[in-house]
Image 1 (spheres, helix red, strand yellow):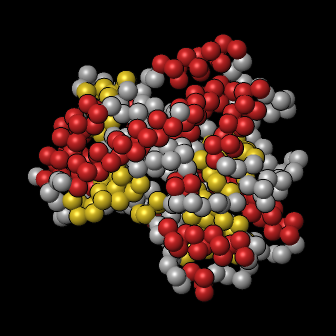
Image 2 (cartoon, protein in one colour):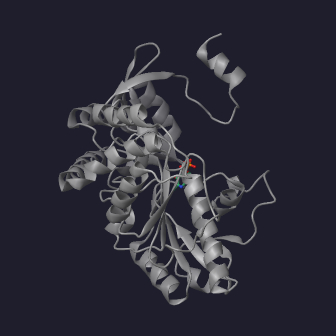
Image 3 (cartoon, rainbow, N blue to C red):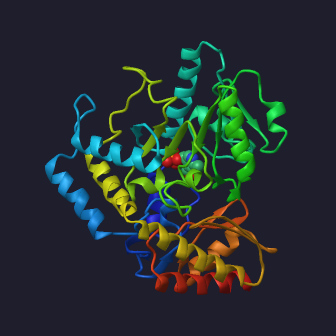
Length: 385
Ligand SMILES: Cc1ncc(COP(=O)(O)O)c(C=O)c1O
């Protein structure tokens, strides 16, 4: 049996996989089981923020593995405390809960909003999310995803979750018992859609005036992806709760739910927990990823590379629209579906992503100009042909 047959036989069939098997990588270049080389513009869907096999990252995790790979959350844990302090300072927040995936971080945020309403005794238990959003795949989050395709099969869903269109009308349509509004800054899975910054600010102000929590899902946009530590910082937003995952762990499974002053003490003993969340081995990787942000040059470089890539792509024929922020890049290609561009690029040695019918690029944050140029050449050929 080859790898495709074995995959089909032993792994639940939830993914539409491409026909290649990636076995190793270095930086933003990787190789399949037949030795073919690919430039990686995907970073494992925004996860490998420092590319493949980063030595500093690997050593940091290895050293932690040799010291203490895990300790339960029944004990204080020096790595967790150190990373928590670094992370809340970088995010401009007060406290963090460590989880293991984007979905878990968002569940943590929604639970916190429900508990907040309980403390306020205001019965505002409804969570509003936006059309075209994506927040995860738990029974609660399937309904939170503002896309009909997620609302099949798995009902009944968690009650009191409502999806609304993101436009000026939203203020008139909010249910009376709205306790939280949750938004991405750039909708990733929904098509790399930039949300209007002024309207986001207006939503934040409305939330503050009406004792509604403003939750920003930065699972995909956060940790440098959009050219600042958080995309919400770039837009001057100050959410009550922010969720992170993907790029935070540089390839290790970790997530964070961050709380501001208003929400920092909503959770009390016993309200929430996880076995693996805040695991020291994984957090040693987070610590290494975050250490890059101590030097502002790291973010400057992300912005310089993002500008370079965007300028080049905007010169390609057939590019109808270029969206996203920083190194989160969406391309609407004239008369062509993203999946067809993706398949053609893969044949030529470039890995890209799609989002709805668009092309989506999420290269590692430290991709080199040489790798960018190699990748752009392949992308240009397949967008223009
Ligand atoms: C904005 C956003 N939120 C949440 C999630 C869910 O994260 P996970 O797959 O780690 O549960 C994703 C995943 O794509 C995402 O893009």
